[in-house]
Image 1 (cartoon, rainbow, N blue to C red):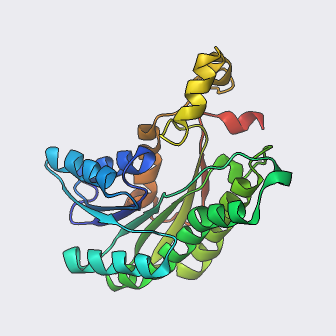
Image 2: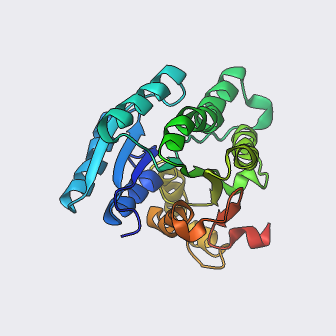
Length: 252
């Protein structure tokens, strides 16, 4: 198993991409701590891991708060003594015209989509270095590379994640690799309202036809790329920005 005796921390690990990745890592032998604000979804993820014979830990924390981030470091240090992989997956979504975005809107998007990535990375680096290094995977979005209307703040933050990835890769190598995945339409709880709206208005097929793969993605569609960039199979790769988008960006 690729991750036997390895420790993985995943933010936003209670649902969607984070939950799917946690289960996949555990199936490959990793010990997995999932982090998020709501304890119940995290415990659901741990239950899925344990039902399959793996080892998981739920840690409820606000990853926009530096003291809370440090507490998660202390929790995993006490439990397993090391971290080999960090997946910065926690994020938000806001759809609002540029001229209507308030300072409060902007700050809220910044805190969860960019600040959390920046400071989770900073706070976990010392523990990763103690264990000899590791891999950090940041989950951004194709909107970190391309713009779209009514999501300017989100685009700005995901673009920040892309550039944070490149900058930290130059500083943290060779011990720690940092790579970024940019998904498009992955059907998570955050995206479900839009998908249901399109389905109710007979427009979902139109969306699917925009993809060369002719469908939107499922959380499990992210697992291959996440595990690849976390593993030794990608040991000479850092600073990469990798699209996981069903080919959607071919048309942009």
